[in-house]
Image 1 (cartoon, rainbow, N blue to C red):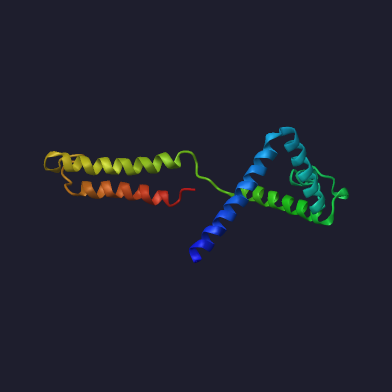
Image 2 (cartoon, rainbow, N blue to C red):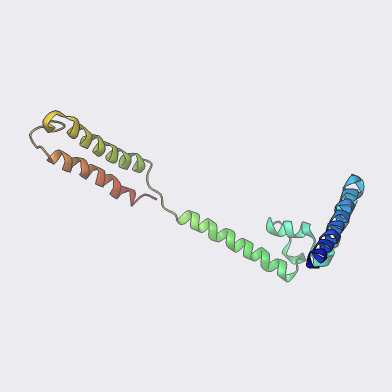
Length: 155
């Protein structure tokens, strides 16, 4: 019993959906009618909201005359100007590192790594500086740490 009702409802919904699709296909077949319908719908939407979309574009682009705008549009335009000013001030206030900063800290890390690798690969730890032994590792790790500490100051 429930299955019959379910199948009946599904078939009714399917028929409704097919009718909608068929009517949509009929609407899109005539491009001239479709263009006129779209223009009419846009005009109706503008009338419904009471605001012309060209006027909204002018407000967003800050090219509108404030005297001819509604109070809501004037508030929107002033908010847009405030946001633009705030973004510009934020951009001006940002600090950046000099151009040499990133290559220097990368060089410190790479040189430290090479220093440690050379120490491990040299026979009996004779290189890069002979006669200091395991202090070569300390020098290598110090160079790597200097590079990592510099990365914390990178902007």
